[in-house]
Amino acid sequence: MTTNPPLRDRAIDALGQALNAVGYWLPVDGRPTAVDAVLALTAADLEASERRAVTLVERIGDARNWARENLPPEQQLALLAILRGSRPKETP
Image (cartoon, rainbow, N blue to C red; front, top):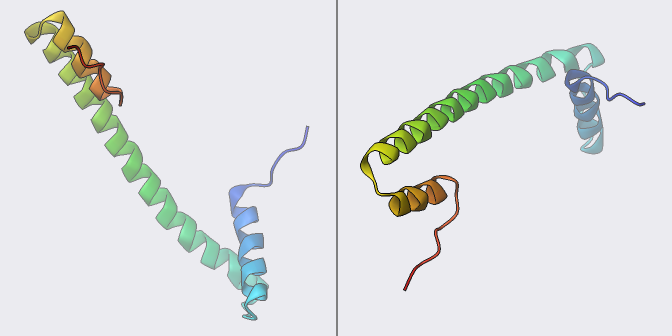
């Protein structure tokens, strides 16, 4: 089984290839510093996205609980379909 090199190593290699492709030069020992800066931003964005996802899951759970207590079964199903990203079938 083959394993992929760590993301940081692949990013350092990709940075070197991209710089070479456009004729720019950055010392080899400076490339990890540039990659680390970008990965730090990416990690912060990922963490913020994860927090937003958790908040949305909690809100969907709250909406589902409210629906169970306050809506008739057919409306509950319609709401849950919308929360799942699908539209309920229209009844004539």
